[in-house]
Length: 366
Image 1 (tube, helix red, strand yellow):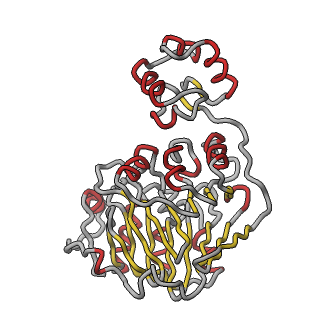
Image 2: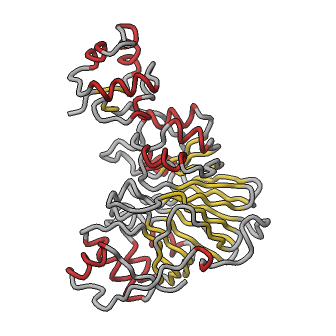
Image 3: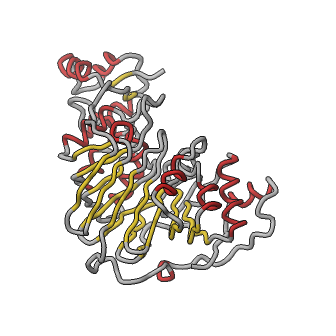
């Protein structure tokens, strides 16, 4: 794939910082120009190993199979965990490195990865950041002459026996988190869905776009936050296994209890890097096995606050007794000063308010 250094707004930022002074825009290649070998729909030749790497409060997932290695996100900026893990596993070359979005807990070690490993291509959304982490990553990509690409929804790539389908975004508008690169990966009969930090609104867009989201393995969006993983999305994916990446005792309270409860209620087995350390899934394309660095069972823990003054329609429906019509009525009537004020809405009486309070999920944020 040819270099594509059309950085859009990012290029402007970097030029102001004195970087990428000679970068020249090139025509964006289409999906047919992606690295292709036998199609992913054919039988997998070797086992695929997916490493959900324990990088603390960040994301990094290594996929290795045949002669290919892909990395989805690179961990946090203040850690060398991703680089250390790659070196410990004798990784020398990465065919594709995906930075789902420019937050420093997802592209934090991208600069080091590009500098210390042979990287074929870097995929990013095109959304920009003013952080040094982002600017230094772009500078490293340019200095190394690494190919750069901005995938868009609907594109499909065959990378050896792995099929990579882009689920989101169709276009970018500057909403970096929400417009995370979201992917469905297919290896034989086993499917994986990764959504970065995409929110419930973006999940619904993926559903509305008609993509086949059904997958055995779901990497929970936004570290298991209640901003992601709506009931509708879970119904569309129907995962057998869900994995989230989060740091032990992180200040965000990730993963949120209501998300873990919803995923388990959907019938999925849940693993988390805060509890299990690095999680490795090994598949021959028909069956899979999971091993963990540490033994432990993910529990719901303390319920997190779902602010009824900010929650989306999908999130509000996670509250006891709240369906679509009541969720929309709550949005029309807010803000509320107390949970008890919900009784102004027709269909929410004292009994329903008692059930909501007993559930302990709904709250009034600060």
